[in-house]
Length: 284
Image 1 (cartoon, rainbow, N blue to C red):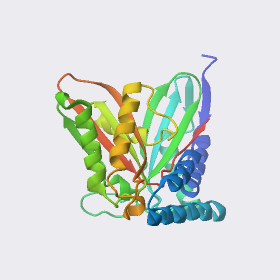
Image 2 (cartoon, rainbow, N blue to C red; image 1 turned 90 degrees about the horizontal axis):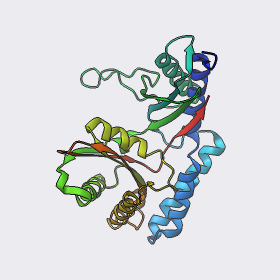
Image 3 (cartoon, rainbow, N blue to C red; image 1 turned 180 degrees about the horizontal axis):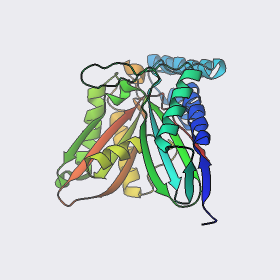
């Protein structure tokens, strides 16, 4: 048991707090680069102007250490735990939620979480609880990824179960229709995360994880990568454009993740991310 490594909950709390602040002040490099490239490729003058203002907003937020968007999101936290890690000092879930609580307080980030989703909808006052996804990995490290998810885009997401015979064309149609129905609501240019396969909850999880894949990386499966490109082309033909004012760039990327599924089904989930695609990771 000498290879077992102890990690204190305080270390986890501090890391989560730091990530909550960082992600809300500064976008990942690949997303910033994607927006810059979109400005070059955008054919609409009004669309170009919108992208210029988006870039200006990003620069101000980074320089002045203020949120990129007033909706600082619901904290989604992915935790990959090495099987040789022993967490000491308390429960993992409590350590993560404490980190979210501290980060949103220290960063002066808007608290948007309500306790009862149906009736009272009373604000919890500290942006907790977070949505936490854990998985076991090999080794003796912990990788934490914080994804503050705004609901202008989250509200535009959809889930369905297609017939197996619908195939790639059915997936493409569902994704493009989802973006068409969303219109300007998710603050385009958007990133489209797509999960295909598994069960309905697995497809939804895949679509969320797809949003944090680098915009510079296609799916390693060449057929899936080809489908990503085809869907992106169709989405950008919709003429929704930056901020919904029309134009040639509605989406920056379409990221598809897949998982084996049952012979009788084809679950498909679409999780839309606005241009404020916030996520950052740390390995402890």
